[in-house]
Structure formats: structure tokens, C-alpha cells
Image (cartoon, rainbow, N blue to C red; front, side, top):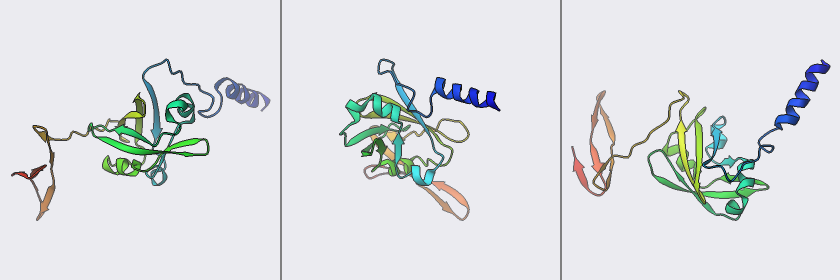
Length: 167
């Protein structure tokens, strides 16, 4: 019993506990952190940025109002940064990001810090495959592809923005 407790104590001293013990070097590029969605009901409303990352970039993140997240489709989302005590959270705008990409339980999100307050987000489903969203376009115009179900048959029509109808 004593040996087990000593090993645990040594392991805790050598590895630290939690993400507070691991320093992030600003010299190493790219800067990344990940989040595993284990509480979607909470994490879909707001998401805590790891403390070690927040400390390493405190000069850039402190007092900031918003960050830009770029999803797999290349679309950008403005998300509010909120300080709660010594923790920093993605808040307003985060829920829309989560809903847009249908992020749920056991999804793995990899955040790449590209520049001041700009993050690229790679999303992996519970199947361990990266989610790739491609926004269809004609020229510089985005297409929306609504799918209509009629009598158990799928029919597809495409609408671009603005006002171009292709069937």
C-alpha cells in the first residue's frame, strides 16, 4: 500500500496535476489546444479555454471582447470572450457555432491559434474522422441546398444567394 501511494505522489510531483502545471512556450508554433465534448448541454452554451493557454497569451486575451473562429467550411464566426474569475470562456456566438456544425457528445475539437484572437477549429466526430464542411459556390456566390422529402422520395434543389434558382 505504501509503495502505491509513493508512486502516485511521485507521479503527481513529476507530471503535476491538471493543465495548470504544463507551461506553454510562446516560441513553439503553431499553438494548439483541444477540447473533448463530454457535457454538450453545458459546453454548447459556453466553452472554457484551458488555463495554461490563457496564461501564456494573457496579454493578447485579457480585456478582449471577441475572437474569430474559422470552422472546417472556411466560414468565420465572431465569439465573445468572457472572463469569469481567473477563467476565460467562449460565450456569445459559441452556441451558434456548435449548432451550425452539429457538434455533440464525444466530438473532439482542435483549436489552432493562428494570430491574435483568431482560431482555426478542426472538428472530429465520435468516429474519429474529421468533419469537413464544404460550402458550395457558383462563382463567388454561396449555394444553399435544401433537401425536400416528398412521399418518401428525396428530391434536391439548389438556391444560390441572391435569387438564382437552379433545378
